[in-house]
Image 1: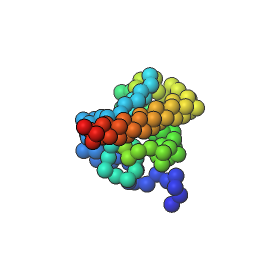
Image 2: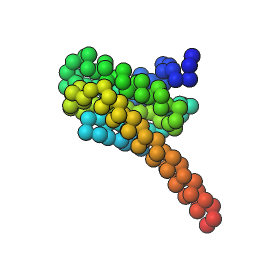
Image 3: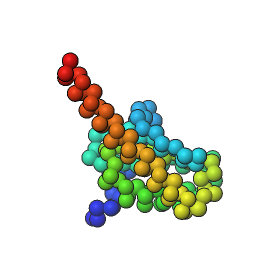
Image 4: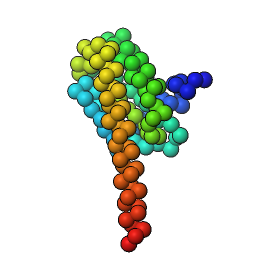
Length: 134
């Protein structure tokens, strides 16, 4: 399998996995049309799950198009991300965007979510150094 694959282990499948992300959200990224929640996992890779409600996106063809675009973006960015579980929630108006707008929006969210994890790790190591000096 290629390094940019999207195997079953890269997906959130069970309700308990989604519940853990909702209950213990550590990172959050949002745009007017999409909300991304993330929490660290014990896996060796990032995983993704979708909550695209019929109430927000009426037509199945639109929900499938959005999932396809987000999965494609995730495949290309998953190796740059920490071991996090991501849940994407759709907001109203997402189906009205064209493919290019959705790609740009999700790529921007991945960029914002990757950056805080590096900052958080750096801050955590600084805190540990301070604690050991005392």
